[in-house]
Length: 218
Image (tube, rainbow, N blue to C red; front, top):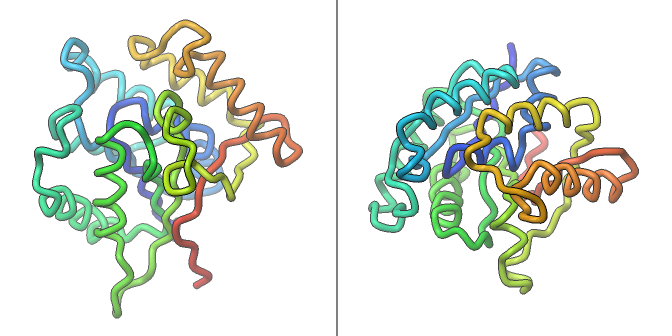
């Protein structure tokens, strides 16, 4: 029986920017990955973003993409309990072993709120299997945060994506309307350069980095 992994992102393209190479690698190793997008994208792109989102994830082998359709950049206006409940319902349905989500220190307020909702929904309760939680970094949000211990992304878990970096880049091309020219961090070169830095850190060509919130040896 394959293990389930939830990738819970705030906006369309965050899931690929943060963990696209790892998503492909997990699927290659027999995991079932379910992508959850909490909020709509930019208003001017709203009419075709769902199509791009499905194609981008399909390219990586993700068969289920769930769109919660909360308002873009307005998660703070939604009662947190409502967001929590949406995620709890998904956890009850899919019983994930792992969750990948945003970092708590990102500059984007939607990212911060979604992290808190995931942390609450995935709290370890008696009688329920514990769920591992890892935070991904999102270019043009994580690196622009305050460089203080309570905000800065602190990578302590690395995935070698040398064999899946091109899948990540090709998947991002479905979100081309969201990409920017270099030296903007949310550019194709920016994504590739960050993957080189993360890979170099652990002695591989390309990597993705995560911050562990909870890992459980079951």
